[in-house]
Amino acid sequence: MPKRKLLLTFPTNLIDKPITYHLVKDYNLELNILRARVTPKEEGRLIVEINGDKKNLYAGEEYLRSAGVGVKPLALDVMYYEERCIHCTACAAVCRSGAITVNRKDMKIVFEKDKCIACELCVTVCPFNAVEIQF
Amino acid sequence: MSKTIREINEKIKRGEAVVFTAEEVIDLVDKKGPKKAAQKVDVVTTGTFGPMCSSGAYFNVGSTKPRIKMGGGKVYLNDVPVYTGLAAMDIFLGATALPDDDPRNSVFPGKFEYGGGHVIEELVGGKDVKLIASAYGTDCYPRKKLETWISLKDMNEAVLFNPRNAYQNYNVAVNLSNKVLYTYMGMLMPKLGNAVYSSAGQLSPLLNDPDYRTIGIGTKIFLGGGVGHVVWNGTQHNPGVQRGGNNVPKVPAGTLAVLGDLKKMSPRWLKGASFLGYGCTMAVGIGVPIPILNEEIVTAAAVKDSDIYTPIVDYSRAYPQCEAETVGEVSYAQLKSGTIEINGKSVPTGGLSSYASAREIAQTLKSWIKTGKFLLTEPVSLIPDSASGVAFKPLNERPLST
Image (cartoon, rainbow over the protein chains, first blue to last red):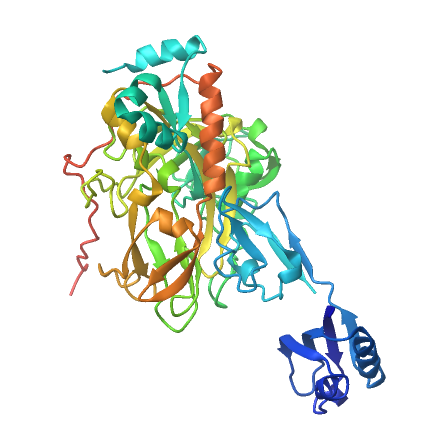
């Protein structure tokens, strides 16, 4: 079953309406909320990972759009600047999703962009600004 | 069996020196034993690349028309203040210096995006920096203001001078509290969320000559991508600490003060760094060659990560309160595996000192020596050892008045 990472933006008038609930109930989609910022009177943002049947994924996204939710595939722009990285490995100790690991043979950082959940702990920990995340 | 540095240098000049890195020599001593290894190997190279805060550079920028007295004045390089308590055209820039208007931790945790270490990195990379000076004016140095672009090429002397580098061993930092900590060991996650270490371990210079049998004043080294020298022991040099059966310190011990021509160094090995909530610093690349004069020295140089231990220190309370208690002890082999056990919990480890870069330095120094480009020096006197009585003491506070 294909997985998709999406950035959902909820205009203020939709903040108090249950919408993601319908993705599960009506479209049989498995929903994993990676990041959420929901504040009253402000645009809400959700980063979700949706897993499901291809037809349902498509129908679910259509539903969201028709309900007024902004839907963008998460262009998780994780920029790893290899030329700035000294491979100190401080980032690997804080990465919970396994996107950053250390190759124990050469003690160098291995960066797997697809596993990144944009928690940004690596960005704050890196003393050399070798990693940036934009989404 | 014993060799002299003079004999080793003759071999280096002939291109016949046998050089191993501190990592490569481990296997050799394991397989052939120290006697054969000492006969075969002439030099063991070591390396380390990590943040070293007590670093900086002094510059002589040359005279202006009319003359300006920077000594005693206010001078900035890219808005980072430099120290002017020297002669008219001599200034000193420290790695941790911050711009006057950097907010520091007023909104916690501060970002500390730019400081002395970053300026040094830019200068070494050939970039122009802004020099802004204001002076109080004298009869002989009448000028009061100067604003100019300047680069390393424009300067007279530009000397990297680091009062404390290459720490021999260092603590592992953990956080036992419930709140994230922002320290010079990086961000420490609550409740043993991560453990941070900072040493090259078996490649680290002083850990391969644990009681300073070969390293001393004048020892020629790889420094910042160029050549430098050890000039003194570093600050906080503490040789008399607890050592293991292999004489390797089990806690932070010796340090080195080093110096070298900044104009011949490289930004690959001198890098400005920012530590959230803590400050700025600079990562420095150092490699020390160890002449294999006898069996004792090659045995020491064959130390492995599994035989080097270090204490685990809680930075939520013990470190800031200057208390001696530790949470445990762990070896560098365990740290480099990626996880260690503390109080029954599996804790992910991360480094600040890059082992991959340390390897590269040791290999680079090895090739310099093998190709005859780098001769060893006889130290003028060795760094004070464990029998010297030198010890690092805390500040004895003596209040000024009642």
